[in-house]
Amino acid sequence: MTDPIMLAAATTLVTWGTTQLAQGGREAVGSLVTFLRERFRREPAARAAIEGAFHEPSPAATQLLAAVLAEEVSRDRASPPSSATGGRRWRPSSSRVRAGW
Image 1 (cartoon, rainbow, N blue to C red):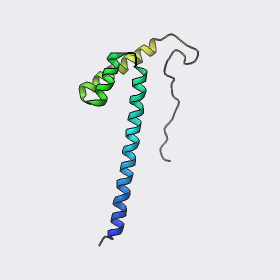
Image 2 (tube, one colour):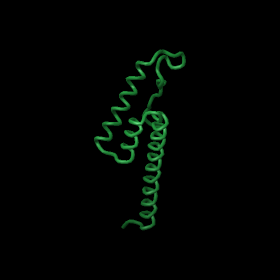
Image 3 (cartoon, rainbow, N blue to C red):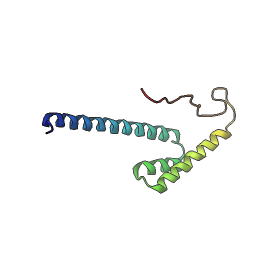
Image 4 (cartoon, rainbow, N blue to C red):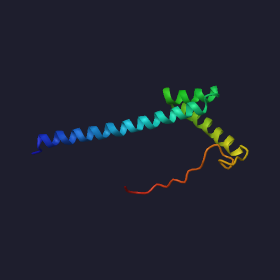
């Protein structure tokens, strides 16, 4: 027979852990949307794509946002060289992901 106190403790821990993971995901998405809104603040069509994907997610909204981001990447590649970024407005990352803690 399962101890009801241990079952309640395990359920509480799982619920708490799930809530914490979801909160972190919400914060990450919120930060990304804030970044994109600021980045495209002077581009109404791009802002509309961002807002559409965030407020009314759908395959069409996602494809539109992907097109906006792809256009930004192509503009970035075509930008003139600068000393700070080597010709890119987005600095490359050298981060590496390792398995484990």
